[in-house]
Amino acid sequence: EKKHKVTIVGSGNWGSTIAKIVAENTKQHNDIFEEQVQMWVFEEDVVIGSDSKHYNAAIGDKPQKLTSIINSKHENVKYLPGITLPSNIIANPSLADAVKGSSILIFNLPHQFIANVCKQVRGHILPFARGISCIKGVNVTDDGVSLFSEWIGDGLNIYCGALSGANIASEIAAEKWSETTVAYDPPPMDNSRNPSPRSGSPNPGITVTDLQDLSHRDCRGRASKTKLTALPAEYPPLDHDCFRTLFHRHYFHVQMVSDVAGVSLGGALKNIVALAAGFVDGRGWGDNAKAAIMRIGLMEMVKFGKEFFGETVQSQTFTETSAGVADLITSSSGGRNFRCARKAVEQGISVEEVEKKELNGQKLQGTTTAFEVNSFLKARGLEKDYPLFTAVNDILLGKKDVDDIPNLVATVTDGA
Ligand code: NAD
Ligand code: 13P
Image (cartoon, rainbow, N blue to C red; front, side, top):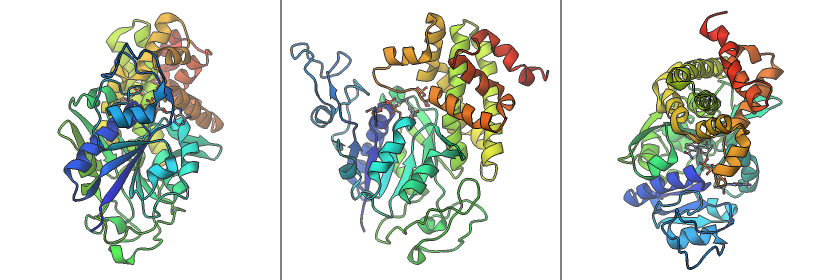
């Protein structure tokens, strides 16, 4: 039997943390996976700072390539300083080379960079590769809104699931316990040894040997345009068991589900709510106000999912999984979007200014997601139906003030 080779596309704060988890598991389960894990790194020259285990005042601020630091010191000194990475992670500055021969591709980078990355990856991957998107964001175009898992899948002609949860990277990198949710629901061909729970599948009972170009349904229940290539029979099946084995650690507990839309939307939309939580916290309004923001935010998340992905999305994904309410709570308590929004209000400057000053190259997803979701809602005349999402957009643009929030969401709080 062949083994699965794994590539992580991305190496930021979360990308490096997921690479650590995956590399620990490929080493432990080397009967299923090749031990070496490729990690594509957006190459840059960095100076090793005092938060790194390898800081050396005598060397001073001599810049070095990030890939060579990761490969020699086993630490991502810029995006995950202070954490030792397993030595079976290979940092690779070439995208085409990093994805070559991998049957599992894990996309983990800020959503604003994924389009360019996918363009470079096209034509270099195995046709039967499968993906998991750890990206928290949605793709908004003139035609509408789509999930990055589907957008990646369609662009690369592969099936792509999603991983999302209450997962602040620094805590998980330090091996503090948390949960996550992995949504994976390919057509039955990959799951012949572990049937997918999706009901009404168009291809029931088909086995791995029949498997070329089978049609499947997308997250809106429509026939997908993507023509999948079968996983050759000599590979271990890429099913729920395989992905649980790849991601589960004693400190990172995985729940496998089939609701790709719910998991992806939970991770994207909570970033808008976390900004609002930061705004009211920065204003000094306390925990009651923050809880109100989370309650209203959760309602808007569920409404958005039902309105635009109603054919497949399940409300319980928002209310019962780590990718839903748990991520909303953790992100509104200590996430970067929350912290930057709070500081922006405290200091009377924009969230973008705080991001540039404080995050050392890490990227917020909430600001762009708030603008993208707003442009989608506005084009459909639906801004008023999502008063909190709209308020966050308007506050970021300076059109409204944090003090306006109670009135702006009054239709939800008191039915006015
Ligand atoms: P990050 O915020 O650390 O972003 C920096 C990354 O972007 C670096 O790897 C940098 O090299 C890369 N980059 C910069 N310019 C680039 C360019 N032009 N092209 C390509 N890459 C470029 O990233 P992250 O924290 O790993 O976030 C990735 C995704 O994971 C996001 O969608 C985020 O919402 C999600 N997420 C983050 C966390 C967290 O705690 N950090 C937790 C869960 C999910
Ligand atoms: P931030 O990007 O706001 O830090 O959120 C991290 C996250 O997604 C935690 O689950």
